[in-house]
Length: 206
Image 1 (cartoon, helix red, strand yellow):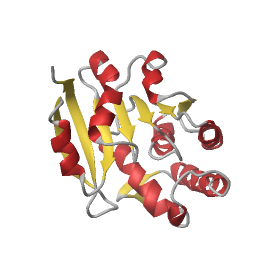
Image 2 (spheres, helix red, strand yellow):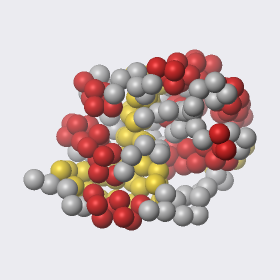
Image 3 (spheres, helix red, strand yellow):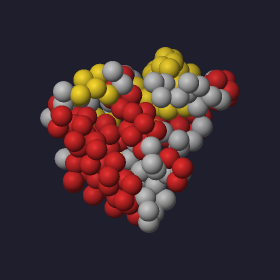
């Protein structure tokens, strides 16, 4: 066993995550998966940060990862679920080159997931229901809530896990103008001023 954010993971999961990092660094040389400045420390900047999502919600449910991009946190969650041999991640990424990378990453790491190369607004017609939603570095909270709303209508128990930086309180106040929701702020294990917002009971205000 090895540690990730102070939590134990199997050697197999560690190997899968390390292979994913190698793939990410290889593909990022030809397509824009993330900021170039973060490539060399992908483990600490992206893997450890993304793993917080699964560690906050380790139940093997059905996830929708919005704007999956370079695979954070969606591929990391899919790899963690492989250790449980339960659960599934639907990764939504409209960019075909990034979607091709994500397919390769799932295939080579054995992650439990599938890729949907469509716009986020089209995804609810493909993935009718889910238990959890994740997103990282995608959009502000009002926009994320609009993306999540179709799934929230289908599942009153839906929970969303959203990475946010130091300005997250401003986004929360902005969202309260149009949305009713409960939240729990989880301090980031990676960035001092960042959080993972756990959102539930999401409803649009009339």
